[in-house]
Length: 219
Image 1 (cartoon, one colour):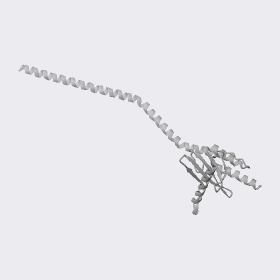
Image 2: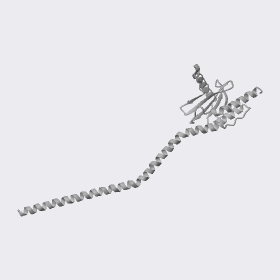
Image 3: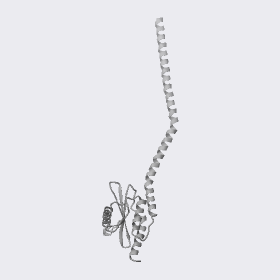
Image 4: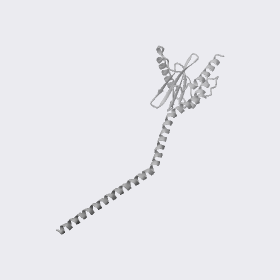
């Protein structure tokens, strides 16, 4: 009987010891896991300012790129307007029209510039215009289209623009000098053109043509 009691007490002691050791191991594992988590959090906290700065830098770069993308066309248009406003028009000779159109082509980065009459016949072209007949035909078609759009009392357009599959924009600006109806047509690849892009040169063309007409009349 005493032996059974001793065996029972021994078994109980072993169970208690095993439970204690198991609990100790569990506690150690929990503390070790917590320690690793604390180390990882500490490492992440050290990297947090750097990551925030990197994210802020990326956001600033993205914002700067967006602003530049929005402003670039506006800056190009303003630059074009300024350049065309400061052309030097000489008065008195037919060649002065060519000189003026050459300045337009250079300052505006145009591949071709054409001054034509109401039927699209060329009056003058820039020196870099390779196919004036084709550009004149385009101007003639645009003038015809403007006439049709202005029928039945509708306001007639002053400028028409085409954009082809080669990313070339053709802008035709219609204007009058006295009783003459004329057009300036310019072609440019990749430029940000607006319907009013050629307006700054109209007064200079007008002045050259009027002076030439007066000279022909002997005035």
